[in-house]
Length: 430
Image (cartoon, rainbow, N blue to C red; front, side, top):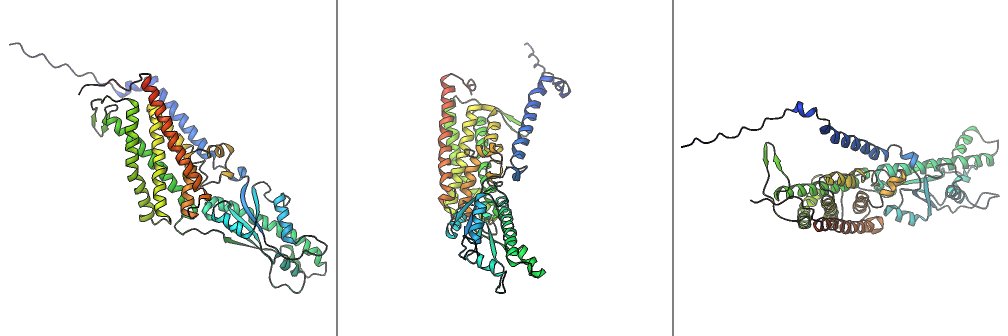
């Protein structure tokens, strides 16, 4: 009886040092790493490096409630003159950084409550009377200008508005001081002259308060970021898991490596499977995000049912977008999706740095980048009583647009690939 033939010898193992000497092995990872690092640096830092330089047209309300009589020889009272100087840009303070909106007190409060303005400067009814009384013996109090902040628009945006309004009020005080000093004459004692040189008292108050557990207006940004990350990461986990289960990708867990038999299924059917799974699994991820933030961390949040529905729809829109991009670009899809949803989305979101304080490129991106749309919706729900005019209506519209674009783009690409006969892998028998 013939002896069995010896088993073939295992192939010789290649050493890492040998592979490191191959230039082609270095080329693609080096180029991709360098390009990614360069683009990430430009895109992330470019949006926040100098908000003051790019600040233009920050919406701020200007309320003139002054009812005092004009000074002798003047046709307008001091409040009206301040309003005209500020809105015409002749005040000399922050001429183009603010977009001043002359409003009544009620209109200004409505815009503060809907997040349409970052702050307000209020001139009270007795402003002229108090200012003119300083030149007489009838003075009882200094005239006051009130700066109202809107922390719901974010700590940086509210701070920028507060700085602009405070500087404008101080400039108005100095201008009025010169007029009062001239009217008082040379006989005024030094103490009165010092008071008249800067007669207006500037007070700061919160125009639209938010809760203590609101991160000084930053919880909306981080919550929206969580929704994007949940959709992005969940979409990629489902994409890789399905490909591994269907035999189109290797599955490695530690030292274990498997390659399952390939299931014969075309690209379109695979995309349907991934999108349906995304819709189901997102129910869990969006619920857990809300549970962790609201219940465990006690983030201030009202309209909880609406917040949950919005969280689910927002996360699902991102997840479907990830599936569409992966179906279109294959292995590079995860990088493309990262740029679409995260890299370009963060600096153009407007939730940390106001869009009026970023370069024009980011303002252009904000019209369609998902992070801005979700941030506006979350901020409206958390801080502005879920008002549609606070950005929630636009956010819902853009989420619906995201659904439609993801479905149309994803299935257009997979149907095209299938019709062209671009199979992912040749099916293998079990």
